[in-house]
Length: 114
Image 1 (cartoon, rainbow, N blue to C red):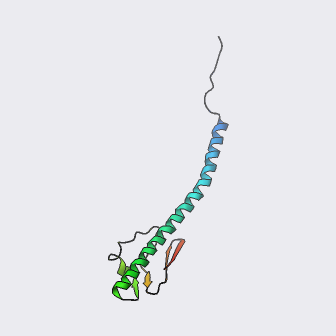
Image 2 (spheres, rainbow, N blue to C red):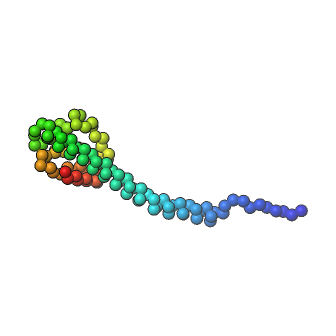
Image 3 (cartoon, rainbow, N blue to C red):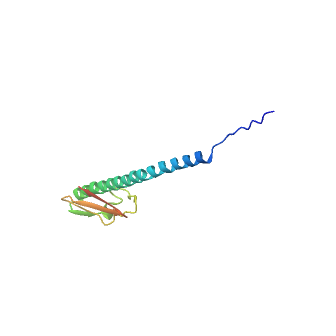
């Protein structure tokens, strides 16, 4: 009678190697994910600024004024813009001669020149 013991399973060293590999992959993936997220936020805010500038220029043409504030545009020229990262558009003013719209959201500042 032979005593044949079947050794199935993983050793502690093999499990530790797998955990280290997963940790290294996560360490590389998280900064890349954060960069993509930040770029996406910036593009969404820039898109919002384009919409505000376009609506402002349309308002100026319709009303014959030289400047218009965000509050005058909201509702008639576009629906309320949802903040992407805590930014506020309330103080933006669109000028007849063009200009720059700047929005600051936490540590991110987005500038759009129209």
